[in-house]
Amino acid sequence: MPITVSAHGPHIGVVTIDNPSKANAMSRDMLAELAGIWQQLDGDASCRAIVVTGAGSRAFTAGADVSGDLSASEETAATINRALLKTEPFSKPIVAAVNGACLGGGIELLLAADIRYAAPHAIFGLPEVKWAIYPFGGAAAKLVHQIGHVQAMKLLLTAEHVDADEAVRIGLINEVVPAERLIERAIATAEVIAANSPMAVQAVKRFVSTGIAEQAQVREPFEQSLGDAVRASSDFIEGVAAFRERRQPSYEQISKAGDEAPLR
Image 1 (spheres, one colour):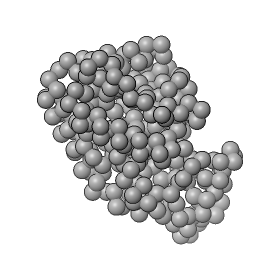
Image 2 (cartoon, helix red, strand yellow):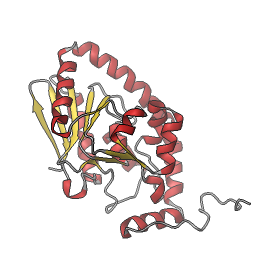
Image 3 (tube, helix red, strand yellow):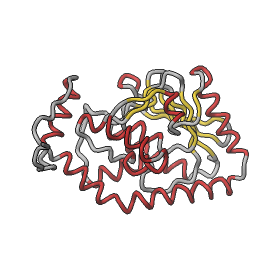
Image 4 (spheres, helix red, strand yellow):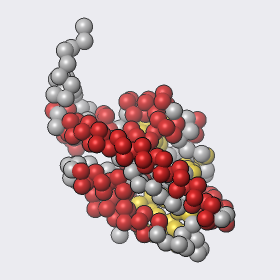
């Protein structure tokens, strides 16, 4: 299975994105599977905390598998939203153990986590705009709220990567942990959470996640329209082709979506 769920003791679930040959990139089928896993764990009374990580040491997840289907109908967007916990409240605390590259949809999965640890070699970035893709999995909706306007916009608009130390500095993660102790640290934190009152913990988590989800729900139609405009543009054709051909994209022509006069 590309995503595995294992139990650590009676109250902790460990979710592992397991597609190491593609840097744990997630296909549409994997996203649908992940959405189902969250639903299962949310309804499991014995589950009090969750750890999410990637298989191997190369990547947490490199995001969407761009070699596959890139269409984004409302139905597809709804599946992605559920997989990345963008528009629905969630009751169980999530601890992320970032064991490598955390890019694109990987950041958006990270934004669903409440406490975040990373190995020293982890890198973080939102490369979507470089490849003419709208980051509709939650980054535009959540990142400014979580780390502040200027830090979020730098990640969103430059497509640059930051290392683990910088991710701590800007508040994207809590702490850098030696790779060999990363999962241990994440599970230890989950155990502390699980030892607290599950009623109180889940009430706090549900309140916070409901506020985030409600904001995202209100803006979802607007985000869908923005994403549709990007996908309908010549930029999108060029960006995806450049990504798949492993070359730098060239956006010399004005985007159809912009339809603006050149700057003088």
